[in-house]
Length: 286
Image (cartoon, rainbow, N blue to C red; front, side):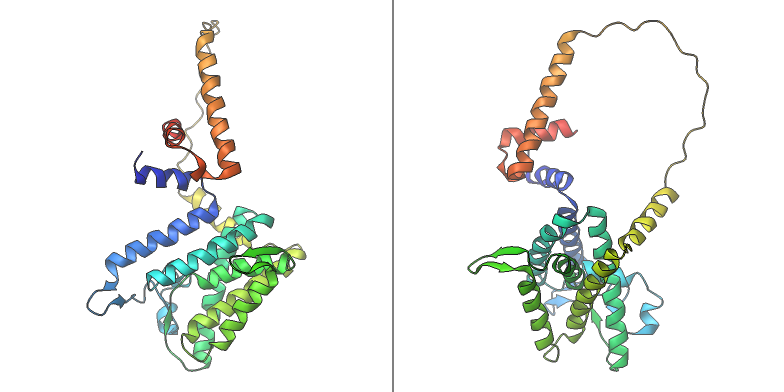
C-alpha cells in the first residue's frame, strides 16, 4: 500500500474532523498552485474567493463568506490553524454530533464574515481576509460554553480548565486588535460570539446547525438520480440451490477479521495497525 492509498483509507475511516482538516489542506495545496506569487513570496487571492469588505464585491460574490474559511496565506498559518482545529474538534465531538460540527463550522464562518464586513465599513476600512480561524473559534467556543470546567491537558503546562484556554486566546485577540490584522481579529471574536449564541439557542431548543443540514439535503435531493419506475416481475418460486457451507465459513472469518481491525482502530487509532492489517482493510474496502 503506497502513501496515497494510506491517506485515502484514513480519509474514509476518519470522522468529520479529519475530513475538515483534509479539505483545508487540499484547498491550500490548490491555492499554492494558482495563487502563490513566487516573485513576491506570498499569496495573492482574487476577490472571487477571498472575502472582501467592499459591499460592491461581496454582494456580487456571496459565496466568499464561506470560501475564505478554507484558505490560508502561508504554511505556518495553515499548520497553526489545523492544530487548534484538531484540538477543538476533539472537545466539540465529545458532546455534539458530526452534523452539528459541520453546521457550526459553516455558520460560524458566515457569521464572522458578516461581522468583519460590517465592522470594516463602520470604521471606513477596506481589506480582505482568509483563514479558518473564525470557524475554529466558533467550534472551540461551543465546547467551552457547553462545559467550561472540562479538564484539558496541555503540553508543558498540565491540566487546566477549558475556559482558561479559550479566555487566553480571546484576550490575545483583544490585545492585538490595533497591532495588525484587525480584520482577522474581528472575525475571531465574531466566531467566539457565534459559538456562545449557538449554545444558548440550543439550550432553548433551537439548533441552528439544522439550517445547514436542510440546505445540504435540498441540494442532495436536487441532484439525486430519479428512481426507476416500478416494474412488475414474475417470481420464480423454484427453491434455490443451497450454498456450500464452506463459503459461509470463509465469509464469516473474513468479516470477523475486519471487525477485529475496526475495534483496534477505535481503541488505539489507525496508526496502530501494522502494514499487513492496513493492506487487508484496504482490499476489503474495495
